[in-house]
Length: 265
Image (cartoon, rainbow, N blue to C red; front, side, top):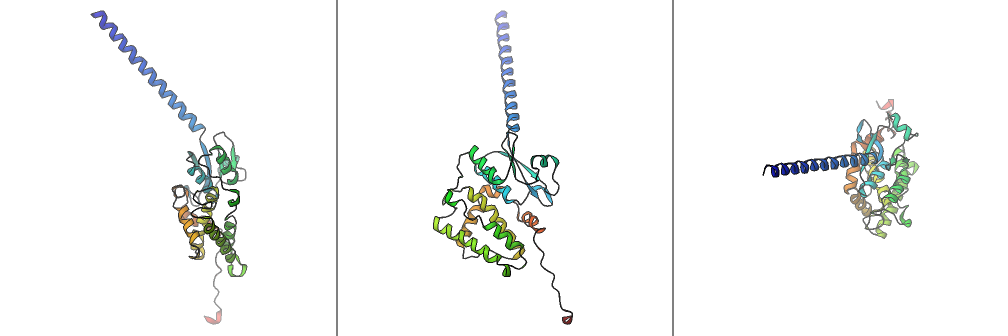
């Protein structure tokens, strides 16, 4: 009986030891897997907010990349770059000091949101965000028209407001003709993820700096912005209105001081 008891004890100890070894092996494997996942994680450098370097900034091109990753459910690490105080490591990977720049996990950094989003599309094809070629340029002239109007000191004289309204009207007609809520109809595509951040800048900045709003008659444009701005991916990646305004504040021309003729004083 004593021998049997000793053998049972030895077996129990061996089982316990084996269990501990298996547990340790699993722990090491999980730790190695975690380290590998961290080492190969997707990284994106984006603009930090003006005056708040720990907050997401107001770059629509950076948001376009973040939107693409969010819509495809690709895990990523976001690195905020203070463009007024660019760190040395950032200038090594982006010599021109521009954002966004993207690393797919292979150590190679890619610039230009057009190139980055195409690389993401090719590497993560599902869900597809490809835009039908005939719709790829829809709304492409809105952002430069918006910037010209925003920077204009006399929009009535230079025609910048009229030009912007014309481009928005073209988007209105496209949405009505090809179905809402998105550029290609029922499915969000890369064209939407490029245009929506720019429209957000348009809506917020023009109302703040010029007291201007998209005409109510453009019901399809309003429905489109509502649909895009309310998407979970957009809410997660957009700057606050305050940070967006701060980003434009230094660029927008100040209105000329009103000079009162001395004979009216």
